[in-house]
Image (cartoon, rainbow, N blue to C red):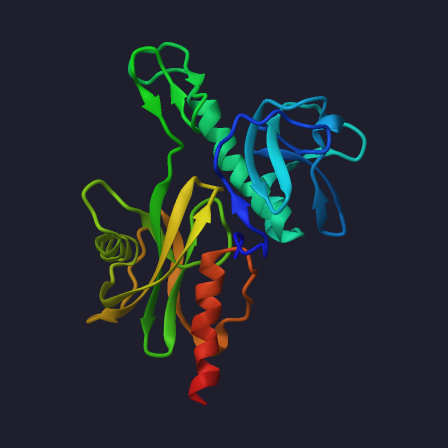
Length: 268
């Protein structure tokens, strides 16, 4: 998955001063400044970008900084979705995680309590206000659900955004446990009731500022899928042999689908 870079990730905030050799990550809306050749991407250095605004994190030995720059040379603003099909893994992970922090900094320039301009804390990654309000990077818990029915799994397509077959997903609401979210989201989106809810694994997902929690469960009772068309375009049961797309090594969704499909080989 996206976070599996093979390198250590250090997100501890320090007010580091950038050096020209550090990596600069620059955004314009949901587009990121990069150079790309044959699927391999690279970000400009701080020196090439003309400076940096704020330290983000370190991946391996490389420090990443948020910056502002215009397109230049081989570097152009490309939609963040390009990273799904790019390499190397460390840069892909850095780009998506930087997007999470960029959006948070963008949306927390002013205090939600009194409206005054906020400043960055000197001691930690937080935005602080003179009124006493402190805002930390927001992380939204969400579930990814593999609903199974014997040798079949329920896959759905969203009305907008991601266009491929995926698992049922949704955000945890106030007062819910993730397991309660699983049952509610499956029921709301497909009309199915489920049992034997089992945690699989998790994934940070900077594209939506989320922490994704993966679960498998089994359909209980009627297996007729009744799609909520406000959120989904379609949904249906897939037998293992019908699943013809591989693990993209990017998303928890694809890994869970690939794991379900692979169970066929274990049983034969």
